[in-house]
Length: 80
Image (cartoon, rainbow, N blue to C red):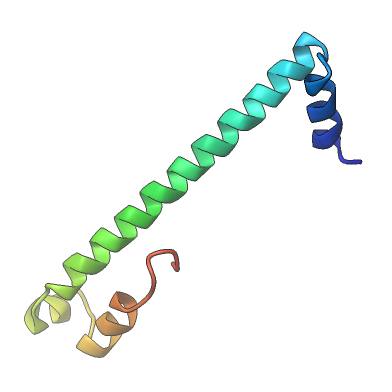
């Protein structure tokens, strides 16, 4: 049995105040991590949309070829 499952079971059975706080803090951390991941995905998708709208000259200015830009643009939002 893992530590987290022991704490969860203790909380379910009316564990100590410290155990309940630890369980709540773990839940908050999971939600915070999920929100951070969603923000990163949205930012990545936005950056790829901006990249797709660039002209050949703008791409050249930042040191990219259209081929390289298309490789990045066509990645799924969850892939860095």
